[in-house]
Image (cartoon, rainbow over all chains, first blue to last red; front, side):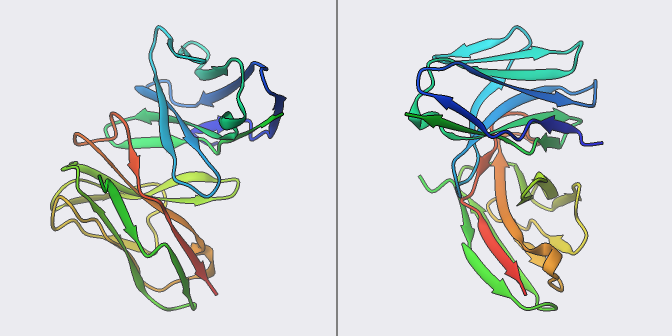
Length: 109
Length: 114
């Protein structure tokens, strides 16, 4: 069983749409949660950390559900520039940061 | 700001050859790591280091060696390349002695083993 699982997509949505991704994790002792964005043939870059109370950064909202062991990312008012692969990452233990396989998003004009 | 620099960006090897992927960071980060990224498998941790002189294995360490003689450098050595090591390799660093915050990635090294 993978430590972190994501729906690989692809998600194809029109501009202006709202889209949500989920990511489940297997270890209930997980301590830190992140969403990364990866453009085609580029390196991943941190999009946002995910806090227990949920957090928002502009059009992006991240939520954590410890009881069900998943994190989510909501993107409102999708832009063409949001097209990318979104990776969730979960840390448990001091040095173990596990990534999901990524969910590919394409925003269509 | 250079951040995390990886070389080479592209490399083709024959089975059995050895090579070293170089990684350097100029942010004085204690934590450094190597990941490989394969289609359908995501990013998988190969080796990591929490400071100069300290290294440890990650999820998929077989066939790779690392060393950390300085804070800045963390090279990854492929001992005897195999086609299964064809992948994109990312070096990443973070403040602190673990990946507790943002992980900064290099641009990646695309390796093909024939």
